[in-house]
Amino acid sequence: MSSAIPEPDWRIFRTLHSIWLDRFCRRVNAELLAVLSDEKRSQHERYLAAYRLMHKRDKELGRALDDFRRSTAVFQIAIIRKLGVINDEELGRFGKEVRASLAYFSGEDHGSTAAE
Image (cartoon, rainbow, N blue to C red; front, side, top):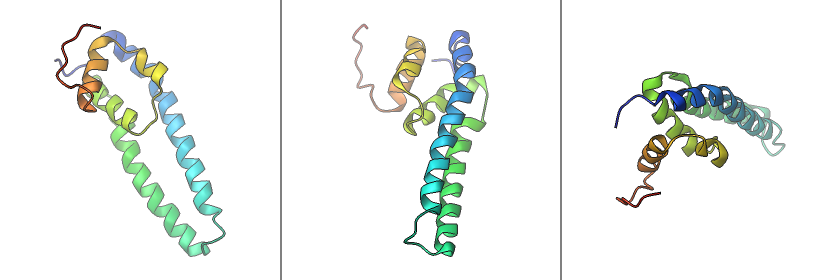
């Protein structure tokens, strides 16, 4: 398996990258709003919870979306998928090779050699 994503899949990746970034940030922003509006916590507790959440999500964002290179695209897609940012329709746009790699990374590949 080559480390670089095939050209047609790279074009799909480049198209979807900004959509995934927006989707991830939208979800994090909603989480932050929930933390910041939690009336059961003091202002300081909210601040600390928001800080911890941002720190955690920033690391996830960096791993999933910051290393924008063709040689790391399949790994990024695997991370994005694990985070629940990619949907089935988007995943289905990628070629068989990329989908097989993603299945392997996620542990879905059970050594099956059945044809699709």
